[in-house]
Image 1 (cartoon, rainbow, N blue to C red):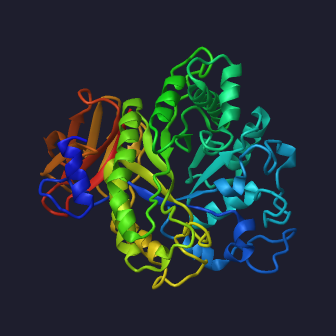
Image 2: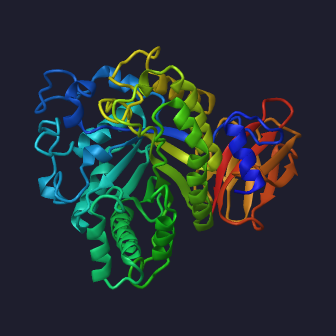
Length: 459
């Protein structure tokens, strides 16, 4: 870890060293994962006595309220994407909207209800396509989402979940069968990438090539960045893995804290920063975003950490740590429940009072203090309250409404100043040719308002 990175870690851990860039608006937003309903019970999610054949709104009203701070809802546990579970990748066998949604008998939740929840709460949708899904399954799923998900919402498209963890030997064998080179793990990572590309191609058939409504995601391994390295190398193979040159948009990790109490988790924060930073370096080089598909606590079973008021400050410092490391979206695991084992839930039960839901209150307050900003592809306009930013292949045009003077500065995610330009007649133009693709922080000072900091992605 170099000196600048040490400064970043020191700042987020509360040392507060001078000279560290402290964004007024965060690059990162926080999303939520949902726990398997059969493990948790239906009351946290649905109203009692729902008639699934006729209902148009099955949701527990408190759940809709509790979704407020999240920008993205990840439905991995509701999708049941692993081999031999859920519909096992057969479209005709998927759970229907009119069937019971209690996930009993190893049944997934209907995609229609996942979409409905995102529409009702104005959230982006994150799905995990089943391991065994064929081309038709991916295409039909893309059609369904395109038809039903509101036009202002994005869908993050992830193939399966943690291929390196669950049934890793199966992926390794599939990679070997395809003749991929390298050791068994490398072959498995290449096969996962190959299958991800196949899924993404079906979504692009429906949404359009490089549509801003779909985010093509690769799931990596927080403690072993070689997995991400293998996947990026595989994407560059245009012979077997990626013959049509489909482009990934994001890579992600799950940097869980595993201390048994607050002090133990605080001690882990530098490691969480480094895990994220290692992957940010790879993501930045590949021109993609870094996300956390899962994040939070994986403390020992029986821990009382959820009830410790000190967890509030810990969660805020944890989010600060990931934000400074370059994470764009951080999905908490889980939004509710799961407290009988590893203390997952931001809330222990839906509707739990903020006064005792310390983790949830920390997320809520952190998001209120760090409102998210939109990040779009080159050639599109990033719309925020102020300023407006248009990202092109070689320029960043910044328009500050009403400002006749001031300055615009572009920083790397670790706080290094890359370029500064004066605002003239409300406009500043920066050249991107010298620092390449990646995620950057843009800070605008016009002398009239608090300096505004937001992210831009340059590809």
